Amino acid sequence: MLDIAEELNRWAEQGRDFAVATVVAVGGSAPRQPGAALAVDAEGTAIGSVSGGCVEGAVYALCEQALRDGETVLERFGYSDDDAFAVGLTCGGVIDILVTPVRAGDPVRPVVASALAAAASGEAAAVARVVSGPRELTGRTLLVRPDGSRMGGFGAHPELDRTVAAEAGAFLDAGRTGTLEIGEQGSRCGAPLTVLVESSVPPPRMIVFGAIDFASALVRIGKFLGYHVTVCDARPVFATRTRFPEADELVVEWPHRYLERTDVDARTVLCVLTHDAKFDVPLLKLALRLPVAYVGAMGSRRTHLDRTARLREVGVTELELSRLHSPIGLDLGARTPEETALSIASEIVAERRGGSGVPLAGAHTPIHHEPGPKAVGRIGSVA
Image (cartoon, rainbow, N blue to C red; front, side, top):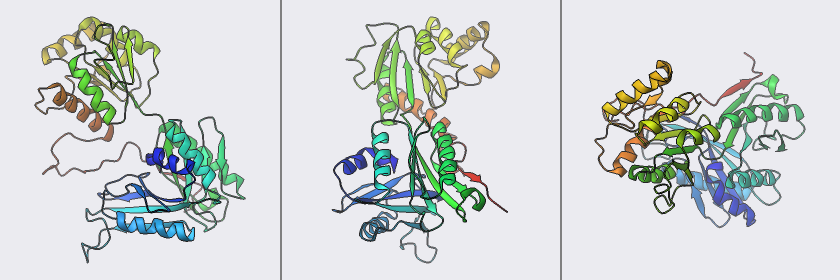
């Protein structure tokens, strides 16, 4: 749901009634991950997607029905061996879809509206919804913010509110979306529960060091991939808004000094395009010791060998050097700045998603990889 928060927030602000269908769980070669959503308003306008087209029509009808009767429903869609043209995922996957009406007067509406407003404005927040369990709890919603404050809840079950809030906070800290299984004892409501937790976090950072023509192309593709992109260069004549109109931020400063003072996290990617030892060595010495997602450095193989030798001389260990992607990018035969940017972006995506970078044709590898640790927990379950 939060993946289409900007448009849904406008609907909420306009007072529109709508129903939102959210992917809860996937199996096999399903095209969308948990959290992907399709919404339909009372006028029949639709936004978003839950399957890339396979079951959109059927999900649209479920949303219309939810708007009429006000009922939250959980529906499973999968491939039909008997009829490949039946409603289902012909790619062979299975998806579970939670359809929630959000209408004037519904108890979930103010909670959903607050979650959408937070996500649309780039604030961090997690929204937890009961997917399955006692009927009176299905669809109930809890909003959790980074400071621990919360809104909504699960009725007369304060212990459950606290349990889910704590778990949702952990999901939020990791920027994860997924399902949480709570056993009968842990739920405090006499039955096991499945809860979908969606996290909205500010976009990850891409910091590009070196204001060269290749950097301009990388900025554009970084924005396309959803990164907040910063360009840093010590030379003011190159780090200009005219050269980088799409960058979120331009910084004129020695690269390593900027990296020392700026905020990075486990989703940040650092792309070093300067290939100049006086910039690269102090910058990479620091970068390879930070808990970031990716560190890549441009240069020829000769430049790479010289660079790694210089880094060893200043105390960078072999373990730290093993984190360095250099020469940067995948082997696509790239020549132009745009092709090179695509090569770098491809390596970043492969690193993020656990891909191999080899052609899918004949590779016998999964098309869709699990994005990091599985976002599934189990609390208070009994054998």
